[in-house]
Image 1 (cartoon, rainbow over the protein chains, first blue to last red):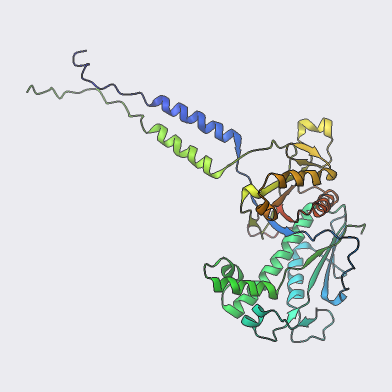
Image 2 (image 1 turned 90 degrees about the vertical axis):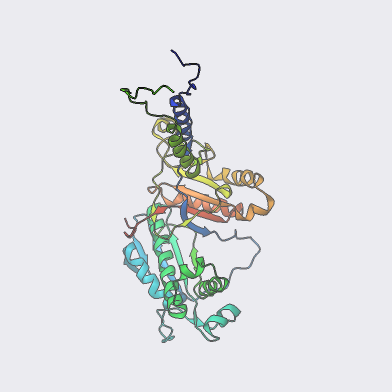
Length: 205
Length: 159
C-alpha cells in the first residue's frame, strides 16, 4: 500500500492476554486460599516424673464440664445443652463477690499484682475460678470445639463487662488499641480474669 | 497540503493493549491473597466453625497437622477411619516427635518458641485421636496449638 513505509506497525496485544491467562491459571491451580483462623491454645507442659503434684483445689472453685461419647454434656452435675454452657460459665466466672459465703460459687482473694492494684485498687476481689474439662475418647470433635468456643466466649464477655464498667471500653478495643495505656489496661483485665481451662486425661465417662 | 478525504467508512479496531493489564490485575490479586500449597491433602476434612477465632499471624511459623478420613480414592487402601497426615504422608501419633523436630530444625533458633501447630481436624473425628496427638505434642514440647476453625457468623455453634 502506498504510504505503508511510514505507518508504524502496531504490535498485536491480543496474545499478551493469552500469556497472562496462562500465568493466572497456573496460580489458580497451585495455590489455596487457606483458612487461617482458629482457636489459639497453649498446652500445659508435660508432667515430669519427679515433680510433686500441685496443691489440691477446692471443688467449689472448679467448674466441672464433662462430655461423654454420646455427646452429652454434664455441667456441675446437671445435664445441659452446649448452647447454655456460655451463660452458666459466665455466672460461675463472675461469681458472687457480694456473697462470699455462697458455696456454689468460687472463693475470692485479693491480689498483689501491681498492675491490678494500679487499675482496680488494692482490694478488688479476684475469683479463684478454674474450669475443668474432661472428655471421653469417643466425644466428637465438633462438640469439643463447641465447648471450647462457648468457654472462650464466656471469658470474653465477662472481660468485656469488667472493661466496660471500669474503663468504658470493650476488652478487644483496649487490646487492639494503639495506645500503650490501653494495652496495659487490657493486660490488667486479662490478669483479673485469667482464662483457666484445665483439661484432664480422657477416660471412660 | 492536500486535504485528505474524510470519508472514513471503517471503524477503527478495538485496542487490545489493555486486555493484559486487566488479567495482570487478577493475577496480582491471586498472588497476594493465596498461599502456595505445599502439601497435597490426602485426608478430607470439614473444618468446624467457632466464634472466638483469632487469625494466625505469621504463616511461615505455622505447621499443619491434618486429621480426617482419607480421600475417596485412597479409602480402599487406608480405610475409612480418621488418619493423621503430616507433610504429605500418613502418620501415627508416634511420628509426631520426629515431625516436631524437623519443623524446629527448619526455623530460626529465636523463632522456635513462636511456632504454632495448627490442627485441622474433621468435625466428625472422635476425641481419642486428637488427644493422642496433643499428648505427643506436649511431650515434644510443642505447646502452642491452634484448633483450625472458620468464623461462625452470629449463630451459636451447636450440634
